[in-house]
Amino acid sequence: MSELKQLMSQISTGGVNGGAMGIPVEVQRFIEQLTFADPENIWESLQEFLAEDWMALPVWARNLAFRLLCLQRPDDVEILGQAGADLLSFGPDWDEFAEKMMARSEELKVRKKG
Image (cartoon, rainbow, N blue to C red; front, side, top):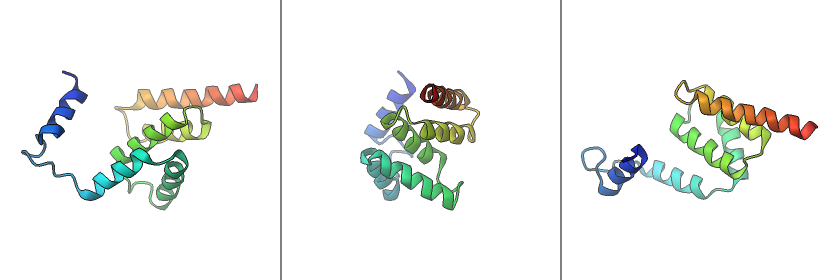
């Protein structure tokens, strides 16, 4: 069983935190809002929030926000570059992904110039 499937199983059966879900309402609302937000809203919100306090947003939340944004805007040079740089700041577990995003951003820049 994959780790992701195992985690899905845990949350579907309440097998988290000794049988209690324990996910704060604010976290649930954040995930729901982020899931259905348009890319402009995600990008603007990230820019504003990170400018106020770069370290305040939990890593899991910023990773999720950047991931959804990159999926919605896969060829946006600025978003890919910032997402890669942000991810690189919280490695080394994700350094490989960060480097791929940054390389893709640079590749797209070159393509757009040429």
